[in-house]
Amino acid sequence: MPRHDFQIPITFKHRVVFTRNAFDAGNPELAAILREGGGRRALAFIEDAVASAWPHMADEMPACFAETEVELRGIHVLPGGEPAKADDHLVREIWTRIDAAHIDRHSYVLAIGGGAFLDAVGFAAATAHRGVRLLRFPTTTLAQADSGVGVKCAINGFGKKNWVGAFAVPFAVINDFRFLHTQDEETRRAGLIEAVKVALVKDRGFFGWIEENLVPLAALEPAALEACVEKSALLHARHIAQGGDPFETGSSRPLDFGHWAAHKLEALTSYQLTHAQAVSVGLALDTLYSSRSGLAPASLAGRVLAVLSSLGLPTYHPALDWLDASGHRHIFAGLDEFREHLGGDLTVLMLRDIGESVDVHRIDPELAAACIDELRGHPAGP
Image (cartoon, one colour):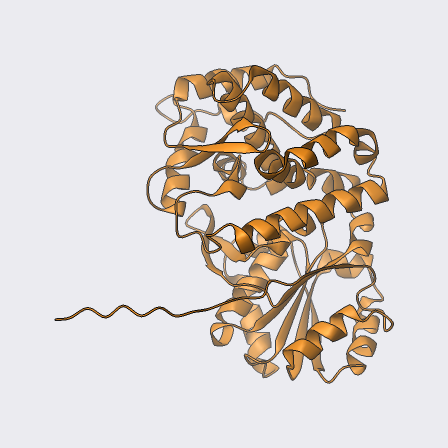
């Protein structure tokens, strides 16, 4: 039988907006996005912690939508944090709400919250009617700098991070900077790790800027924090849009630097270690491995660890040393899980230098164990 191959040209517009007070009646950004889409209805989901920090938001939103031709069909406050994506319970509740409000493919779902909450709401929106338009409003440093501007959405399954999910380009991402400064200090600080990561992988100049601004960044000064988040978000979005593999059909994942260990650390600690904290430890491990294996200059590890310590970000967690019944470190099982999750051969990004990377297909467990030993003795940050 003959084979027929058809090329289906599909393009996506990835809109990322930086603003403040997005739901103020005088702010034109949301109205412009809704006008561009021409949809009919909208349904909003707000993470409970965000609703508590911004109790007047539920009053602002109807007034904002009253200036548009889109009907706001409801505002629902739902629990967030890692439990939101532990299984499909929240996704099913969101499906029920979408169905009851008659939200269709020409309508909008607004997701307002941190990364885990956006993941759960995003997966529900991506699978309802095979895709409802999603407007993401990331509220944490981590989500605004990284995950909120991505095209992935997922929940956990089978004891593994992000096992159930989809690739779905959001209709728009609106980074409202007013949300950044009401987080607790630990949450604001931890999210900076994704800026450090993308700088190491993509932009030597940005890493230099981070080094030059360590004092205001460590103090979480608003101007420095916002500038760092904006640059990080744009680098992430640019890689997704222009990197040649937005839906990750290949084996290389530049933006997953440090994540093979991070995902395993989260699971090992039953998600008591946050994603940001786990990425910081994983990044420290892979940076040190890059230097000690000879891929990168020996001085690189010192520079990166100094930045992490100055920002108060962790470089070690005891779970790195936890052993299984055979006496092997649990953490190295993360390599095979990483390979299975991504597909194909094991491909882990390592550094040649700041802004220069290389894919490797094997991790030497003895050298990695020696790096863990070295990190255990590394002084913690302030």
